[in-house]
Image (cartoon, rainbow, N blue to C red):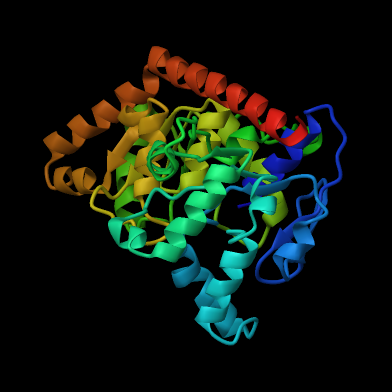
Length: 352
């Protein structure tokens, strides 16, 4: 996610301390163009490459969740020819990202913004995985996971009484003003972004009704449009200037919360937690930051759609939530305090 990668640059830059950074990935070398800076990601061939660094930072994502490697990374690397078989990918993952058996490297490590919220007892039946994960977490300088479920799991695995709750890395993204000539005028529109829950038509119809009742037009954010990745600043600015945002995309929800824009987040209440795109991560995000009122389950939208009376009642409830300034202020204030504390902890672990 571009906002996550950009947030790393931002959180290090406003530390006020100069440092040299090398970026690594497991699959292949590539360059990520962020518009104002380019990041060169180098292929991590082995754990020994990390030995000369002062700190090793694992930044965001599902890097230490076994299912992510088994169901996403390994099949992709085998298809691309980057690996001969899934077993080879898994072994490489244990060596290079779990730092298995390398306590010297684990002690230099910082794990921030990652998630293992979908961990199950089945995962815990794998002795190799539990030993590697527990060792990394126990030895690392700092482990701050992005959600309360993951933090709770880490506390149980390690049992050392540390605070494991962090936040999503994208909350560190610094507000970057785009040039005046390119800036969209404050829209006051209902900004929409769908594409993650498989119910886009249902969501669009319901959102149009909300917008109509609010006396506003809708504007499609185009968040998942891969043809113009450098337009991310424009999209963030549109979110910042929106009357409110309606989305089923996790990082659009994160962006709206960070920018202080009222939000309705749609998600499937019955979603499984077997992939990185599970709707449950949105439910956890909204709940842990005191925004549970702003989460609307797909099933409720569907059930109320057959009756004008019940549909109107749900619309009224949604509008009441986004118009509640005290509620919005409490979310923004609580989030800012939490993120500020996380910045201090992260800087202390990196530079201390």
